Image 1 (cartoon, rainbow, N blue to C red):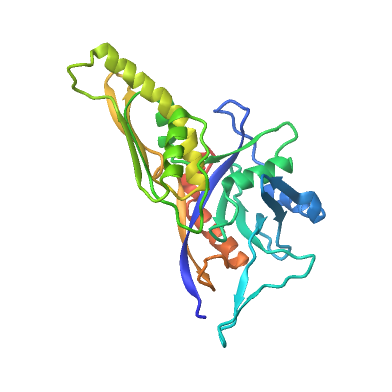
Image 2 (image 1 turned 180 degrees about the vertical axis):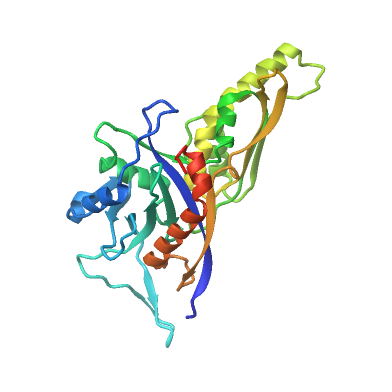
Length: 324
């Protein structure tokens, strides 16, 4: 079968201490050397159980770029087809071998930033990478709880933190591809409501808009101000759910808020906070050899991650306050 191409999205994250104040940044470390040392251990000692998933970390000894290959053991039973006679049969594996889906992680040389590319729709997502790093105690000894923070543009990351009010919030959830279902975890009231709607209506597009009306006979200025504050508080909590959904599902089509920013000269500025487009990502075209999208050459993935990381280096350094 002739090789074809497939678009892959590269996501960038900053490895951070979840228990530290928001402005605190971990000092950069040599992640490549550290991960390589971890992966010299026997497979059982670099295996992490996360719910029903089994995650195993590895490195390619022939590749010098700082990287991690995070494999998730496949739970299905693959079938083989004979293209001569069309017969189907089970894929027979040796007792000590299993099939896995792999995500390639490239460690950039600054700011504790990583780039990730999933090898297929069932490959480990950001939450799995975080869980493996955390359970392997991959950060400094005094860091007990690793967080992977999506890298966003330097200007936009401060908008929500410094917003004085939110006037409108819109989120649009689309049906997931049939081969990559995932539950939408939620910690906020809004997130829980949207998640339940999505679970009950998996084949529908769900659009939620919350807005404080600018002109209303029933709302006094006091009530309107109260509504702005309530929507601001709800958006700040809901933002965590949105970030998690963007990392671990393919359902978020739109997530944006209209914020009122109080400028130093006391004039109010309205700005849009786009939770989707303001994340720094890159698109790669990579070949795959079968129609299911699972087979990506690991060296190809690593080369692509290096290239797009270099192409986006300036904006990534600015986003994580790393010196140019």
